[in-house]
Each structure stands twice: as structure tokens, then as C-alpha cells.
Length: 132
Image (cartoon, rainbow, N blue to C red):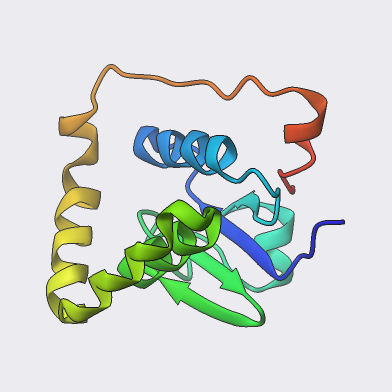
């Protein structure tokens, strides 16, 4: 059974977020991480929304703790599967610098990935990973 203690909240309108969602679903073999839209019902229950946070922010809820921006990405990667545990090494880079890079990519994501769409077509088992 999946615990609701590991939820990735993301912007479902963002092409980069959709690529990241595909990556998470593809690599999350133990199915321990669920995904939810930042403007959805689950996010509302946690009082998260695009209005409270920048729409270009990935938020990760893990064991009752919220991680934002670069911290969220590092924690998500390290929790996906054993191959990505080494992502924690990025914590040696100062948070200010990591978040600057994160914000730069977030601001320019439509320029970098324009005209690229990726639709999530999932089997029934993978659909269980998505919350409203």
C-alpha cells in the first residue's frame, strides 16, 4: 500500500514537470511516491496551491516534511530507487546556488522545451500513483 507521506506536488501544465512526472513514474519501481497537481484537491488539503507558492515550484512531502525547489528534486531523486541515492551529494552545493539554478530553469522552461508535449499514458497500476 502506498503511503500518502511521499507525494510530489507539481504544475501539471508545465512541460518540464510532465517530463519529471514521467521520469518519477518510470523509475519509482517500488511505487512509494505518489504525484498530485499543485492546484488539485490533495494539495488543497495540505493548503498548497499555485497561489501560495510559485507555480514553477516542485514540492515534495516526505514523512510530514515539505521540501521545496532544489531540495525537493534532490530528495525525490534519492527516494526513487537505489541508483539515485547519490543525488544527496548535491547538498554540498550551497542552497542559494542550487535554488538560483532551479529558478533559472523554471523561468526559462518554456523557451527550452517549447513545442514539446508529453502526455502521460499510464496503465491501471501506474494511475494509482496519481492523486486528485
